[in-house]
Amino acid sequence: MDKLNYKSYRIEAENICVDYHGKVALYDANLRLKAGQICGLVGMNGAGKTTFFNALTGFVNISKGKIRINGESLKIAQQDQEIAYVPQSEGIDCQFPVSVWDVVMMGRYGSMNILRSPRESDIQAVKDAIERVDLMELSSTPIGNLSGGQRKRTFLARAIAQRASILLLDEPFAGVDIRTEKLISELFIQFKNEGKTILLSTHDMIHVREFCDLVLLINKTVVAYGETSEVFTPENITNTFGGMSPDVLFGPES
Amino acid sequence: MYGSMLFITNITSLVADPLSHEFMRKALLMSSLVAAVCGFLSSYLTLKGWALMGDAVSHSVMPGVVVAYALGLPFSLGAFVFGVGSVALIGFVKQKSRVKEDTVIGLVFTGFFALGIVLVSKIKSNIDLHSILFGSPLGISLSDVKQTVFISLLVLILLSVFRKDLILYCFDPRHAKTVGINVLFLHYLLLTCLSLAAVVGLQSVGIVLVVAMLITPGATAYLLTDDFDIMTIISVISAIISSVFGIYFSFWFDLETGGSIVLVQTFIFLFAFLFAPRYGIFKIKKLFSNY
Ligand SMILES: Nc1ncnc2c1ncn2[C@@H]1O[C@H](COP(=O)(O)OP(=O)(O)OP(=O)(O)O)[C@@H](O)[C@H]1O
Ligand SMILES: [Mg+2]
Image 1 (spheres, rainbow over the protein chains, first blue to last red):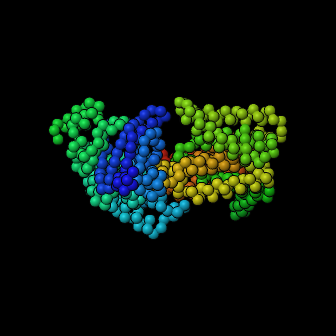
Image 2 (cartoon, rainbow over the protein chains, first blue to last red):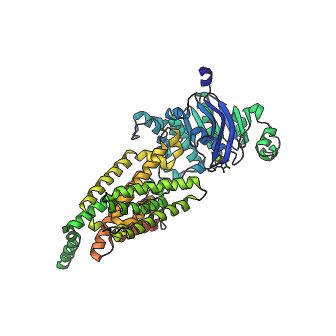
Image 3 (tube, helix red, strand yellow):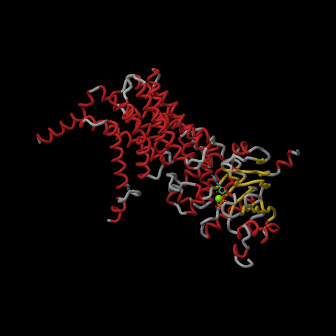
């Protein structure tokens, strides 16, 4: 196989399947993303969005298929800090006694020594990241004392501090106000211009239209995938959401 | 004047007299060391939600202790093997059956514990069931001291070296995995430390109560701070204080030592539960700041 051509994809998932204790959550899913692309992952609750992320981060093993990151195995991508993951809020313990600064510093752990003692460059990276999400004045606050939106930004800052080329974001817009929403979507555009690859799941159809180049519609498997303008059609959306009409989903003719 | 002098002399002798006994000095030192180890680990276990796991491991070491005594091996070796074995078995049964995790845990450790009790009754040796079940910090032998010091230092070193990784593992294992940190290793590291801490802890307070050493200090500290490092420090200090006071109380009033130590821990927790500045029922800080 032509190695160069192969390498041109940042993320390449081929026919991947994931099951939890024999119960299939995702099957025959394909995805190919290049540098500088933003892809929206859309599907109803339980469609397998988080599962897809779990597979791409290596948190669950795929039972079939292949994942390549920059043409290399997942393990190498992990060691090279290529992938950053921003969890869905349900996935973390908000009462854990760590501060914003601590969490963002965790983005640097992978490239630190065994004791994880921060170097000057790590401290700078953390500072920059916290500034970019506009949380500087809260940097020593325990995450338990943050609002939902501030917590989202904290985890986004961790991804920034990691300096990964691929960002996986599980519902980054869930439960944030308009101001934070604007800040986050502006960051996404900046990331895109920096050549990062972004895969984000969302329930907000407007966001997909606004800044996703590509869209991946899933319901345990891929229902449709391609350029947003071509694929994000009422028929496809209806199929993805089990026959529910798009009118119900985002109001009559938006 | 004379009265207060007498009072001070009394207090001094109350505190100092027990120290003239070799066994008391040894008990205080060893129990403080054990408390430091368990207290350190406690903040991880509390946050990871492994209280039941701690209970399981500490009960499961019972047959190991008995077998080791019978064979003349270091008791910590037998305990460790069975502690880790129980964890492996729990993992195996959980994976291979549809039974829920807490049920599996309860099932496995009671089985092991029962095996231990049966073994004690069958192997007629000089095993003191009472001291295994309820601890005997006042009767620690020299070889026990060596084992305890060795294991305690080992656990303290492991926990210090991997401190930040373990925090990350408890907080967000998915992120740890994503940045190439070996999560499986950390999982077994924490379980190993848990088994080892249970092994040394059971000398102080016995198998039945050792789980208190592993969760109460951490739970107390969790009510008092939002900073992991401070939480660990509070946890260690409260564990040491409990051990020292527990042993003194048991000396003064002739109480079962293990029970006395755990009871002091429980009272400290209760105090934090009621009066912790932010998370206590009465939130004393609020009272102060309002007036
Ligand atoms: N750890 C797990 N163990 C067993 N089943 C799981 C696990 N995680 C997810 N599942 C199942 O896999 C399916 C897909 O779940 P997933 O979390 O990927 O959905 P999702 O698209 O992220 O949903 P949501 O929009 O609610 O976040 C669901 O049926 C769920 O019950
Ligand atoms: Mg999800």
